[in-house]
Image (cartoon, rainbow, N blue to C red; front, side, top):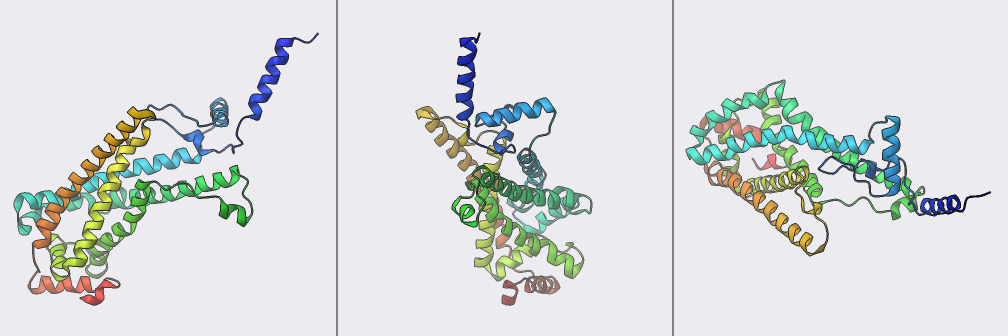
Length: 309
């Protein structure tokens, strides 16, 4: 004889299963982790996948590892950026002199330009940060195409790409600026002189003296975009970004407050950096004699802008 309670349970389970949104097993939402360390799936299917993975002893999905690569790679070049701000802004602000500031730059340069440390502290983390961000975006795009069954070109074109956050947009703007800065200050001296022994704050001041407007715009964009990207990125890593807040009036007020705090911190850091860079270093004037001619030779080898020298 059939049990009516079991029949009601079976019918209710069947209804619940039909209400689950279709999602691929490698849904990146299953990898979403809150700041407290607990998984926060956005759908019942994600919950099912998480429990199944735990039972079978499977590893996390690609999104989990890509997010952590992106996060932990930023730690290394944050340390480098801190040293760089001190050398190119804070110390010049204190000494008010380029000749007095250059020895500090030369003293700390072996910490991040020696053969074992430069790739570990700057090159590799920066490459990993950019590559993991790109791979994560492509992975989420592929997952969305699989979820909605977009197979034809028309279907794929109609499906929008994952939303690009403001922090990510700043990061993609920053990448060519950092590449250009590294090329002028590191790659050119290595190619044509075998090292950066003669490249210091006077080299930067020489470029500002020869072409102040171009140098000022590029420098301002590098500092501004870099500081805002880094500040908002660290707010995300620390769980302090406004998007973490809930809804309602209290949540809205807290989001506004957090945005103001984060932007104020970014403005303060960028202001201090530019105060030393534009207020002291950029006003150092042209280098004279053989050093000035050497700097002219390096700047003249820049693509596009080198013709102006």
